Length: 206
Image 1: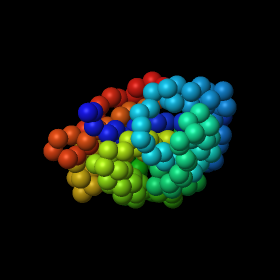
Image 2: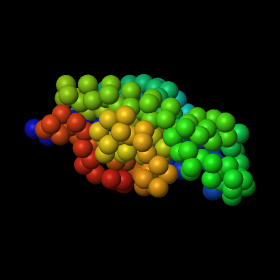
Image 3: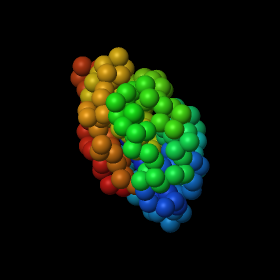
Image 4: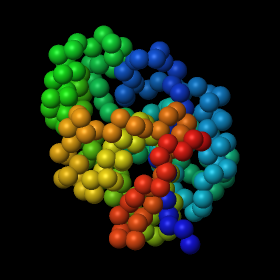
């Protein structure tokens, strides 16, 4: 019997100009791309499973579309799965953010609050808490699906590789994983024999 799996799914492409910092901005995703992602995801997911999603509409709409295709699913919003809060940077083009602000972030990567928003340490802490809860379901044989954001996917990848929150908080900008699932893609993790999560697939297209 294959182990229970955590599916970290990124929302479909958002309806916003490329190059924009949108973090917690509640922008919608492309409706057609969302429906296509839901259909492909529905045909791939195992059972039984628990579905959780970021409360932002670009994730919620994908979760609801998936629930409409699988009557046994219910949608559970979880604020821990939201994207990073970029504060005053939200809605601005990345190219317009002052170089010295970006440099300050990379020099104090876990504690600097970009745009006076959320620091990475806080984000890692909340994602770690959600991950610990997901592991409890996985250990009981229930698959878990998160519909979330690139930032959360990077946090999961880093936390799994480091093995603990304490180790993960030592990250520098140079070490931080740049890879994340594309829009409408996922990465998967399963419980290894020694009781921790291990990566199965990276950026599996939905």
